[in-house]
Length: 128
Image 1 (cartoon, one colour):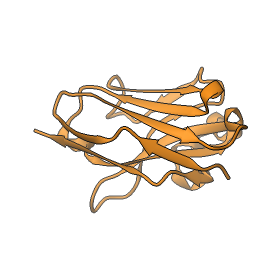
Image 2 (image 1 turned 135 degrees about the vertical axis):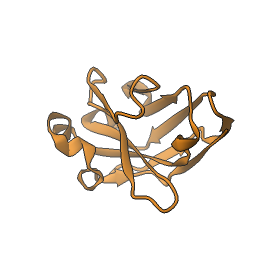
Image 3 (image 1 turned 180 degrees about the horizontal axis):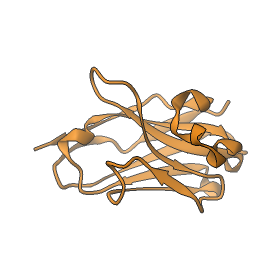
């Protein structure tokens, strides 16, 4: 498993932007597919975005498509989630997660149980 640490969360007004970062401890970071999930109070954890090992293929949940951008820098062992045009409904604890590179090929990339390493989570609050 790889240790993951998120940063960059906070409070912002609707329409604003935040950039989440996920630092990985493992020098083989480039072998892991990466995902972002979020969990709002009283709700289940839900898929937000996924990026494959080389960063060329990405997937997004419908309600963030066009507003959020997932990226990675394998040389720096980092993954990112750029969040623009934020809405109050985006308020949640956000998690980055790492999984086997093969999950990028299948719908398993959308499901949290297929990721083997998780960050501690970071709060994002969007006010109206």
